[in-house]
Length: 411
Length: 173
Image (cartoon, each protein chain N blue to C red):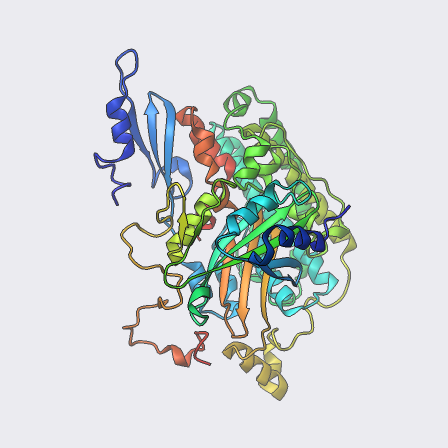
């Protein structure tokens, strides 16, 4: 624990000893975290401070590491889904769908159009929920609590839609191999319609409240900027990368689940600072709303799951009355399903960037190796770089604008 | 002009000879192997060569194959991406099971820093030249590398459940 406890041999202690400012003042160490109300999660940063200015930072992560990759190696494919929920828990349906798509790519299953469109709808809802939390919390950190309280009720509405679809709210475990577990209820579509009517009005107000607000602009413009070049070096993806001016989006680069059927823009920023990240997320919410509307308008009729009895659990009443279904049910639950030997990489555009699953199978019922490419883990490295030279209060704002989710950071 | 996989293969084989091998399409990703002594140079070439331009390191992770012969018991898998041509690439390098070590690529990609630390943490693969190779997700006092296959997922002393009856592991049929 030597680097956590700040013993005298810590490298910052030596720097402090050797450095004196011109006015005779000393540098100091500040322990930001692991638990601190302003960090929205368990992150520790040891900061080397000159007054209120940050000279250097040393992040420690892993406080909620739950060994998902190890657990995944010991669980059948359908049980891995509940692990993915708990990574980016602000947008779990995206993780769920990404996992099913990885398995479907492995098994070469073609998902019916209706299921693909429904997946797009739920993934975009999740993206809205994710961006909504990030942007409103950024407001809270700059002193504007009202915006947060106002739009947060719409996250509740989104969760009610999830509840109609799958019964769960936060960690959804939604979908199955080949599609969805059941047809969406009428109530779900009704709630979706109400949401699409009310939410844009509130989001517009939220946007107006912030985008040209003097205080907000002062707190965010030129705070924690990152150049496009450095952003690529640090492996940034998603809104944080796009804020730096690069229009890379997995939905456009490698369309999955029929994203190519929809017409949407990729909003980009310029300077990659906190304000640009805020604006990019705002703009993406509008694109998401437009995608959901298009998907609802074009939603085809048809089955909600692929015809893959080897992997898709049969309806319960058939299991009790039908020999075939009983056998399939037994085989799936006991993990006796044929799985090809392959290496798969599948990426989707998660709330925070490219969420990738690297899956190695050896023909057994469990993954041989499953690696999660977690965007948060990868871009949190750039945080140190971004806060150096800034004020302490800026460090908090930058952290929330990056939307670092502890669950995804530590897996 | 789209970047063809044959172009990548030709360029690399002409430069590295038999140090790059086993070129194949693994589903939608063009993949190949490189020997550990050449991997740094291969990745540098892929990055800086103008018509290859694999400027983005998507992912880096380890895999443990205890069943393989000793020289191939660990693998480090690199995923690279050329955003301009929209081509992905997977490079695998196999390392020895006794003393797994490979050159770091942190000098080429800053993002490799934590990815390599994670791989070191979980597999004990030594990345030569890494600026700060220490554990990242596990606590520093830990002595084992938990993603190695011999590391049990649960406490072996547990008597309240028998995994054989629950279809849990890859090896119990």
